[in-house]
Image 1 (cartoon, rainbow, N blue to C red):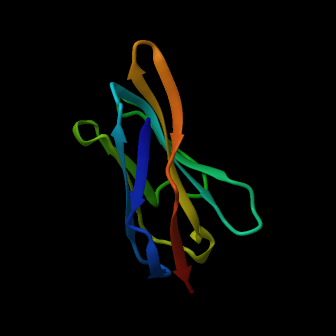
Image 2: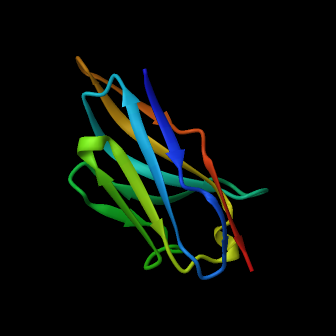
Length: 120
């Protein structure tokens, strides 16, 4: 089994910054893609950013140029640096990862989510 634990959420004023972290632990051989999703009240879950094991990144248009996804493979951790935050960025942010657990087993895991609230 693998656990993903997010941290770094909180309340910030519009224009401010926050850095989210998501650490994976458990039976990990390697991790392929890691992702950040968000879900605002009454809205569908949105894929915010993706980073591959090689470091290639992709972003939703709504956050491009403001958010940066990165990872530390030695620590099995993914980060989301969020800048120029807007009230519409308010949501629960969750990390997601494709984990190789060895012996050909690959599974997708989710963290529990962390609340980000941006005040105007």
